Amino acid sequence: MYEEVQVLTHSSIRIAGNQIIYFDPFNVEGEPHDADIICVTHDHFDHYSPEDLAKVKNAATILVCPKTMKDALSNSGISEEFTELVAPGDEMEINGVRIQAVPAYNVGKQFHPQANQWVGYLVTMNDVIYYIAGDTDINEDVKKVRCDVALLPVGGTYTMTAEEAAKLAEIIHPKAAIPTHYGSVAGKAEDGQIFADLLKDKINVIIKM
Image (cartoon, rainbow, N blue to C red; front, side):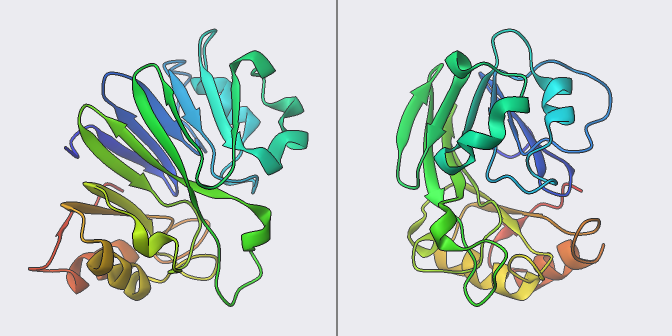
């Protein structure tokens, strides 16, 4: 269920099921060109990186982005024909993979306002539901998420802290939780372990970074 998940760095995630899906590819090593689908959560530099899209995309790659990023996509390297624009709540199926856009926004911070309509993703592949939260705080929308594997930001400043992410994990109670968004651009290297310790004997936490 979670063996196929890689957290490459920060919030750069690769999930290999019957499709290979990247989320917010950033600082990718090498040029694998193996992405069937790339999902971008928002247009901050550490989440939308045209340089890294170029490393993972190929001629058939489909790019999924928030509708509010439309004007920023001229340098994506992926044509409109292969681009899907989504708003929070939208659902679609791509190559047999179910993708739902979930609201991602801050509460009491200015970095990711709800009005920007940026997103996280619920992805159903190989009968597993993955939740890639994007940059978000605990809010009424994310509390409604139901998933098998939750990838949650824990680094604070721009997103939830490890303590807040642990509270959200207890609310949505996935079978497994994986911490992201710490140790480089934001957060401390130990934030992932703090998150795991807070959920000990409650939720299976797998540290991937």
